[in-house]
Image (cartoon, rainbow over all chains, first blue to last red; front, side):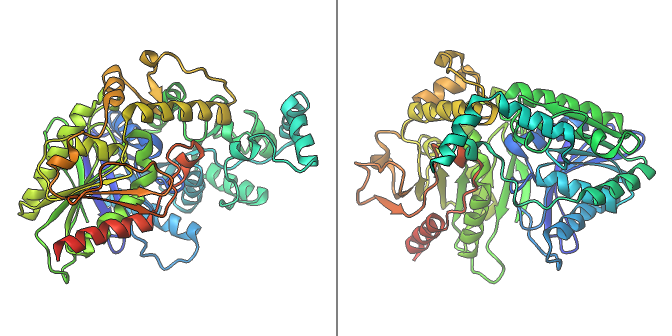
Length: 269
Length: 257
């Protein structure tokens, strides 16, 4: 395995580190890891660095990189919307691995806003054969609401928070525990259903991972299947990490995530 | 900006050289930036890029790099020690001196990077300590408290910190026994002012001021920013500390006149 810093994009404005396998897989496959929010290309606590090295040992070409304007990359795109720029940058990253390493098929992975970016680029580019979304899209169902409100009925803290709110105080740590939701733009349920149809037609495999921090969006494993039906979700695997936070800051959870990702990506080769 | 690997071939370090732009006369003066350690590294990356770019625009050759096992450098962070990271700082100083073809090398260290830098024997033209860790033991205590907050706030898991000797992970990073002992013993050297030719300490308004350091050769400056180093929630907040960056760049510019 060798690691090579690289620049790419129309003006060489994008920066990444390519992790190249000593023995590439027969079907040259690339894993692209783009930013989780504003965290630079190493990922949270260097999660992307470790994942890149692990999958490279399994024959996968990995590229961890910064989208324009984040980390070590500059923003040279004419697009004004972040969503469009991110897809342009992910496409440029695929082009780079295709031209420099002969990679023809890709798996995209992202955490948080990186998951949203990975989904949009997967829809846009037929070279993508797999996508991993960590704390990405989720849509509420009756089962979600039952668990959401049911757990609150049994939680004494919910009552004390309610009383505090009524008397004008702040709820106990609730505002601190929530992951910021308001800076991401989600596909509507109808849009996402159309996306799923398109990805199924291409047989794109999807892995959805939800942490405890995302329980306000997804709180049970079958939620996507209930939201869109089993037919639409036959290429979609869901795993819950109920004891992990958004950034996987405990080592046992991080190890579990890395093992899952490594094996899932290797299966796509 | 040029990224590359340097140091020992078995465990190459990742570095990024920011050269002065072509239309700016170079000063033949190199500056090494030393990142904070472990959990604080991620928060400051963009801020360090901004500092490197600002210094380069002022004519300095700047090298920022990742310690062994961290960021994009090779190695396993689970086996990392402060002794190795001190060696990495020395390697980085040699590397930028060679690249910039100069003997004038200065360094800026932030937080744990400042404490490490201050305790190396590398001969620097100017030493800038930015919000340095004054006592590693207190620093480790604050990480332990933040780890507990993380478990309670994010995961609703009450946590009683085990004995210090049994702590093996904090805020997403493994902590081995040697590293823990070295962190506990880390402090700014007592003879820092005496052996420093030109030194500066720049600290944010909420950091504990360092007394006894201000002297003819070692200037202490307060700048207005609140990094919230000891707050768990601030761990996810990215620092773009313009006042501190401007102050540090002006320190170098003033000195070079």
